[in-house]
Amino acid sequence: MATTKSMKIQAEIDKVKAKIADQQARLKELEKNKLEAENSEIVDIVRGMSIPLAELPLLFEKLKSGGALGQSVPKSGAALLRKRRKTEYETISSLNSGALCRCSFMRV
Image 1 (cartoon, one colour):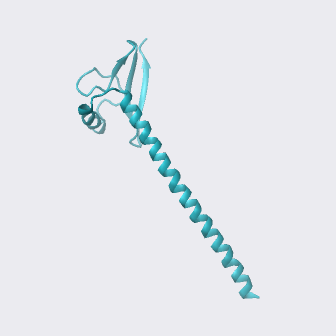
Image 2 (tube, rainbow, N blue to C red):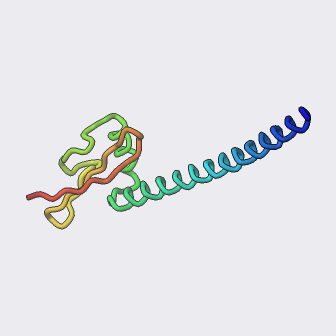
Image 3 (spheres, rainbow, N blue to C red):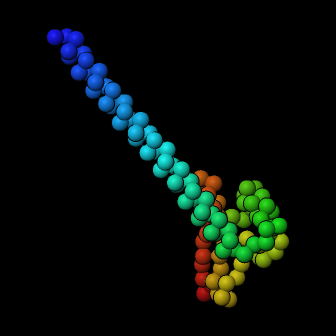
């Protein structure tokens, strides 16, 4: 009788381990999809800024060093700010996670 009970418990353990493995595989796939989506968003933001490819490393270096993040700065060199439709401005900011975000504001 004890052998039968232990075999049932072992079968249940095996089922749970299989479910855990399935969920871990699903988690890995979801994390991969999230990373791809974040990368796509970053590419879209950078492309939307119309910054020449040669100036992109300067922009990232400035962001990395913490220079004028999320603030209005004059247009120059690695332009962190660009004017759109005369009254709308756009900046990029670095979040705590290291991701870039685009912020738009209107001048009144």
